[in-house]
Length: 130
Length: 143
Image (cartoon, rainbow over all chains, first blue to last red; front, side):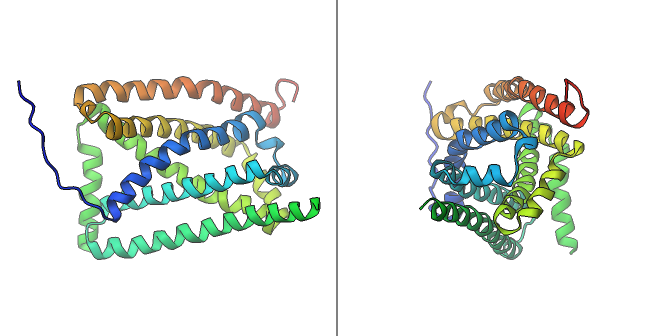
């Protein structure tokens, strides 16, 4: 029996980058997200979490970096996933382009809000330690 | 507008009427768990930022998270995160490492295993979170 190799043209465009992004970040997110959920939801639990808990957590550079990576990978993975799902429902290129920009702005605004708080709290704690 | 409604209908009826069995259910569950997690995540990023911007509002947000319906939602969220992770890993592994395994027979089996492993991992998590819920909100187990 011979096996026929099907040749396909490879594209290096935005969509193929997005395809790879979902897979690479997906692998990184397995330990990051599961670790986060395991610690915060299962071991610590929402009744033990308050302002002081979060401030203390973010005064540790390890958890600050952990949460920055979590924010960067997870939300971009999620919003790109939303874009891919919506593209299955919206069939004109024009509408897809418009929605693409809407999702990009949504992603950027929420990411900046999250990163701002994370870094500002860390800086404040660092200043307090000095 | 008519074209938009037509395109919505085409895709949605495909979601419902396609008879791909295990692969079809895995596709739907992957999308559903992904979108559900994203909805939570967007809210979660903004409310956690209140720790810096409006600390008293963060306490309010936590009171909502400690409310019984939200804690039940959180238990479902953990299932979504576990399933989406394992099913995503299945897709990544076959796409990037072993494309020859993209056969209907192998993937029907793999999709079933994915769901089974997800449930097995979720049950102890759900047990602990259910215990916390009963302990804190219903005064059980000496709460």
